[in-house]
Image 1 (cartoon, rainbow, N blue to C red):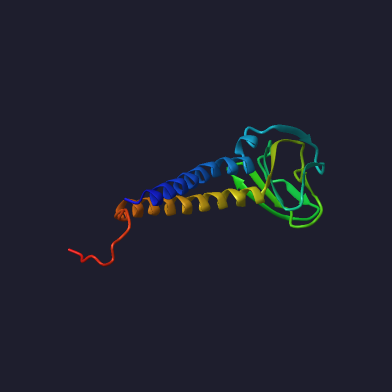
Image 2: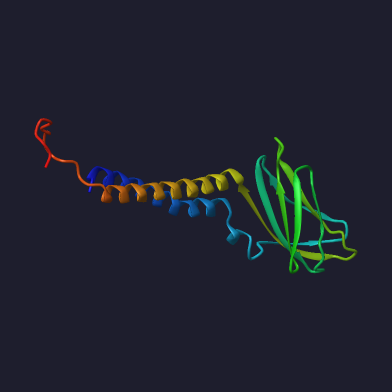
Length: 172
């Protein structure tokens, strides 16, 4: 057993495990579904009336979950940015990613012919935090695997002979 290799491998293994286990906490700070459900805000809208849901900062993703008393999808507009809308059993999810350099305003408009009540929640998350969390997870896993291999190699290798070698003496 080579103690230095085992010790070094153990340190690398511990650092890798810590990074790997810390990455979900970094991920949870970038996206938290608890802040979306239950719906936080409620507003009554007349036909044609709209509300401003959020200002989406540059390089960030805003998710809006809403449902309305008509159970129909409403018109979602933005001043720029990429929009995607999905129907999740009567709850509608809208995602807006701002690829520009200026903030984007996200609007919800009542396109139904009667007054409705809209319940919604808004979450703005940074994609850079998400990428950092994924990077931490991958790097931590690689360090943990490398540390484990170093510990195994250190345990398998024979110890170095102690003391000076006499090169003139015959080997038995």
